[in-house]
Each structure stands twice: as C-alpha cells, then as structure tokens.
Image (cartoon, rainbow, N blue to C red; front, side, top):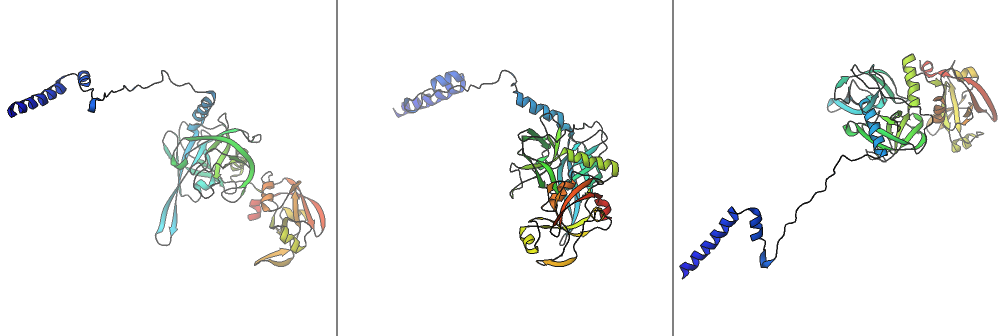
Length: 387
C-alpha cells in the first residue's frame, strides 16, 4: 500500500515537471493560473505610448534653438595655467578656466582679464574640440577685459549688438563653460541696469544684471539678445557665499568693450582720462568735523603737477591732519559735482571718466572754503599721470 502511494507521488511530480518543461508558455499559464488557496493570478500586458512623429517645437523653443546654433560655434573654453609659490611646497602649478568668444576670422578672442590674470600659458579650446595656444594682445585690469589671439582655421565670429537701448525685462541668453561643461546655454531676463564694482574693484558703469544662470567658468562668455547678438560679457555673480549661481549675475555692456577694443587697436592700451588729483572721499561725519560746506564729496589732497586739475587751477591741501591713524592733507578744494552729476566718492568720479576720453572738457563743481565754484577742465591721460 505504501509502495503504491510512493509511486503515485513520483508520477504526479514527474508529470508536473514534464508538462512545465515541454508545453508552450501560454498553456503553462493556463494550467498554472490558479495560485495558492485557489486565487487567480493574471499577468496584464505592458503597454507603452510612443510618439508617432518628432515633437513640434513652439515658437519660444525654436528661438532658443536658433540662438544656440547661431552662437555656440563662436564660444570658446579658456584654460590659464600659472605657478604660485608656497612656503612649504615651493612652486605650485595652478589652473583656471573661463569662457570667451571669437571676434573675427583672424583669431581674436575677447574674455575677462581675471580669467587670464598672472597666467604663463593660455590655451583656447574651440567648439570642435581643437586646442590652440593663445597669446595676449592687450589687457585692461580696470575694465576686466583681455584680448587674445589664436591661429586657427574656419573660425565663426559673433555679431556685436548695441547695448545703449537695453531694457529691463528683455530676454537674454548666456553661453559658456560653467564648471568646464562646454557649450552650456542658460536663459533669463535683464533684471536691472546698474553700476557695480567689478571683480578687480573698479566700477562697471551700466552693468547688465540678469537672472540667467551664470556659474564659475562662465566668466568671459557672451550674454546674448533674442537674435543671438552679443550685448555683454558675463563677468561675475553675487553668490552670498556660495560658489554657484544665486540668480544674480552681471555682464559688462558690449559698448564698453567696443570702446576698450578701439583703444587696444589704436594705441595698444586703454586711454583712460584723469583729473590728475589725489583725493579722499568725505562722508557726513567727517564733513561735520572738518566744518565743510557740503555733507559729502571728494576732497582734493594733492594735484599732479602739470596735470588737468593743476592746469585748471584746482587746489590741493596745505595742512596735515589725521583721520584716525591716517595722515591726510586738508584745506584743498572739495569736488561735489562733474557735468551736473553729484560726486560723493571716488567711484562717482570713475563713473564719469568712463564716459569720456583724454582731451574732453568737463565742468567741475567744487567748494573753495565756503565759496561754490564752477571750473572748466580738460581731462588728461591717466597713463601720462602714472609715467
């Protein structure tokens, strides 16, 4: 009896194995469709919905694509290499990255000065992945601009726009190499147009503020309008302590770059106008202590002999005094305006100088003692003042 039961179990197990091994899958599913406790187990088919054709781009997407295709071949990746000295390790190689863009088929490339500052070797990688050694044609630390040149074939130059009529709310695009990711485009709007201090501490007049994402590596790349024309050079971001975009980026207006490039080509350097003075910014507290007739302005400590201020009869200080621990000269003229613009500190003078060339004549409003005066002055060349 036990032998019969054992043979029956063997036959059932063997039969189940033979059926599941040799029958088609759909019959196995039918046979095995009952789960534990008689529960039916069903397998639903996986159905995917696929597009029948390539997606159609809306008008905004099409414009984004057009701007990118028009400009991306003109944007380059710049690598600068330098050597610094460390007390413990001696000479230490350093490397920095930024962006730039091609100005002409002769290989001129515009970027920021701080991208290539102190570099002893500069390499430019074009969009087709070729790398070329670059030479510095000219640079200007004050405007944070540098002109490079490479010897490369088939270059595609950008188109430069006019930045005088930019409007807040206007759509803009930034193309560059953030964190070394070449050919990256972001977009946003012009958030404001304002004067700010650049990476080198000098004022940038009419800087373009944008919420287009600008990150480390974007410096020197183009800021574009909706036609793919360059309206600015991306130069810095307000980070709030974070080394990435916070939605506040700034670009040097392209018209400023045009003026600098014009000087580069004509003189080999930037001709910057100068009043020919050594000065001190005066605030309300100091003005009250010194008994000055205005609450703010720029006090002339010294005039450069033979300079613009000296020729116009502007007077420097004649009495030594101390402001905290700093020795200053008082008794000189107090400049409070130039060409009708209020002057509160030296950055205001710098902003006025940005709009002029050496040889231009300006009207300076000043106090001599308690007497208010207007003085006509022909601007000198800052290079001559420093020589």
